[in-house]
Length: 478
Image (cartoon, rainbow, N blue to C red; front, side):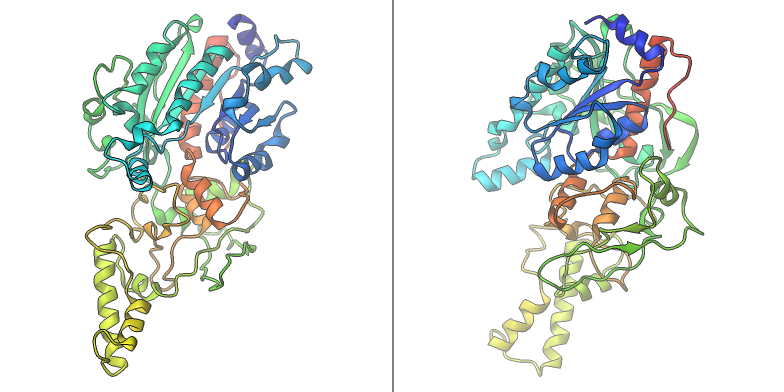
């Protein structure tokens, strides 16, 4: 690859071209696009996520192409269409970004694999998705972009006794100067505690040493996260960590963490529809007279502005548990919810004349009031949002286990809506999701928070422009 040609084009004003592997709905893509990149290729095997990505990005570039399966997509096929409209050498992409499936690496994913496959503690080591990380490395080596960005969970640092992030850096060391770091999304304006590992590499000819973006928000991170104190990331990594950057810089002008109330407090009340199917329907947003800075950003994100209406502010019907939700306090988890359910159960028994324990009436009342889960086995299955702090991490199974994020408003007494989940993940209101309720929730839970992606992408694009001697610095389109 002749990096001088690519740098000359960027110096003359061409936006850096990005290809995104395992693109999902487009969280990482949105960060790259907003940082000034042109999205020229996206690969995503899930048809609903691929459609969502196309709906949001296909019309934004003449070069955009989408592909279904990274295992069946040849590197030349991925970028050959660029030569039809450009005098640049065929196959030229400047940035390759990828987020291989994280379930085999994450603690939650490992537990689910053990339960599904019935294996022992190391059953997750046999997951075929692990090979996708190696495939990604081969794709980067074949495409030879100016820069690559890989995203995954921090558990990659100690996968089966190996530091896979270090191994990625070493395997690409002949071509790229690489570094990796764990970033806390809340430190970049996302109203959510969420840690993600990023591996960034620049072509050695550029003489750039990758570095994490400066944090823009500060506050106290809960003790359960690696980013809660300095040194925990380094201690967490297995074996050598020569390419690890453990310290994150902070901007000179920082703000407090964005809270749940700031993120979703402006959205209108919503009630479960009570039907067997959740129907998407349009809801008008209230006037923007007293919005938080975050809510205003979600409504005015350049290129993804709100039309004043959202069509996915809907929730799952939970008739058995609404009274439990109403009685829970912010921060309460399942053991407290179970205690409240037993309290409601006893009240219903008294109202029914105290039917005999074990009788049909007794059993029907219990089924109608008490969840069937053991509070000792599932202590974190339920959680009520705390309006004065960021949310807990949204997960991929949010659609099925949405009780992990119960709305803080006891009057509404419900779980969060699709649009509220999108807000907590920092997707703007103008970003459109396709598919049914579960699909939308899964895509949101799987995504890279766009604001976190924007921070990483802005640093990468800025470094590329500086290397190219571009006359104008990167300017985030917000």
